[in-house]
Amino acid sequence: MANFESGLYYSESHEYVRVEGEFGYIGISDYAQHALGNVVYVDMPEVDDEVTAGEEFGAVESVKAASDLIAPVSGTVVEVNEALEDEPELLNKDAFANWIIKVQLSDPAELDNLMDVEAYKKHCE
Amino acid sequence: MEKKTCLYDRHVALGALMSPFGGFIMPIQYSNITDEHNAVRQHCGVFDVSHMGEVRITGPDAEQYVQHIFTNDVTDAPFGQIYYGMMCYPNGGTVDDLLVYKMGDNDFFLVINAANIDKDVAWMNEQKEGFDINLDHQSDYYGQLAVQGPEAEAVVEEVLGLPCKELKFYTAKTLDVADGDEGETIIISRTGYTGEDGFEIYGSHEFTQKAWDKLMESGRCKPCGLGCRDTLRFEVGLPLYGDELSADISPVMAGLSIFVKLDKPEFIGKEALAEQKANGVAQKLVGIELTDKAIPRHGYAVLSPEDDVIGEVTTGYHCLSVDKSVCMALVKTEYAKLGTELAIQIRKKVFPGVVVKKKFYDKHYKK
Image (cartoon, rainbow over all chains, first blue to last red; front, side):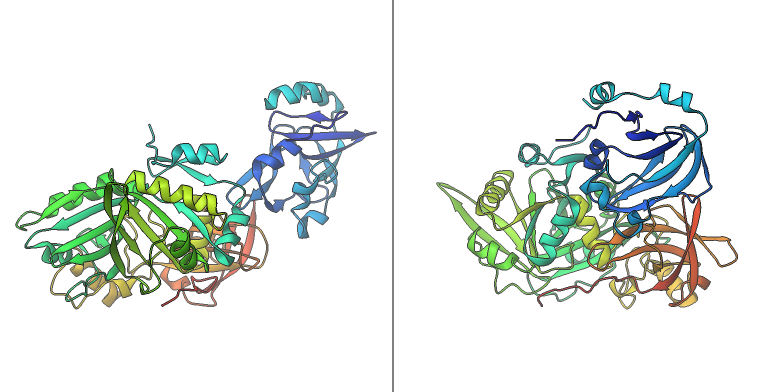
């Protein structure tokens, strides 16, 4: 069964944000990687791109289909997880350790719109 | 409301991901597509393909009628011979692609795509005027299993007890199988849709359920869903109706002219297809290989080096047997030559690619 990590902020579309100071690490939940199956490609934005809460910033592709990544918060991309370019399957191995992008948060108040782990667990039931 | 095959309860019990396909609720995957794909390439997998449609054509004019509606040539075929080909509209567009089994003199067994069953049967009925034939739509009677992979022959012989060793590629035979006091005649053929050796077995729902259970109990055959059926057929360049063939995509456009016998005296669509063959077509189906790992999907735009839209992806995957992102696409003919550089729009980005053969992995048939 899927793991749920506490201390993160979750969106309804199954992305998470781990906040460290003014930065947010954005990835997909373990529940999401289970639902997707084998991840074979991760389409990521570039450093300095702006992402906007609620808007698509990339995609995760399984063998069968592409699923859009929706930004849970707004900000500027300061780093992308380049390891995923060669090993997209890392998302299946550990979705929480393998974040997808790191952003400088432009509006931390947006975090209030996201779910904590308990609410997210209920959302997945 | 989607129909269920006779194995529906078994798929659900196995925890399969079920999804609508061609009017049926079908298993897409049981474990994951990659493992199921590799099982068929390396060992043996079984697919429930009971959604496929079956039509039996008999009567004094059966051969003449099949010749009239079918692009391939079944004249003088030996019993058990199977032909792949299409039914076309008078304008050359494709009604469906199908297998025609010659079961006897003026006795043919036609296997059609699930999504097209109603359309095909209506089409066949419309064409039968003037032919003394009996058209028996048997889709509701037959279940169908496809046992595929290098170990398929041993599994069918040893687990199902059906002698099949001597069957040649693209031939079929009937077998009388006894079940207590009851018995029935099944059809088994050395055919498939995976590029591997394998068999397709047509029998009653009861037979199909029992055969499936034996295969599951044996542990020698992995249950495989339609997800890997698509990746398997795609990488060996086999077309899927709705993607590579349609009312708008003729067999000539799809590069399937070898299954269109223009030397036959007559068949529906012959004039249009002969004209396409002689004068060329505006669009052709090609293979495209990308340099990046991004995945082209059905419906994505194909771009010329000048960024004009010159076509559309019909099927694409990150190919599982050869680690590459590839697709089939329908493009303007001037861009269809091998080696032509073009690009594919994938979401916001454009990825360069090159025209290659439509076969990304070699077939391993046992002929």
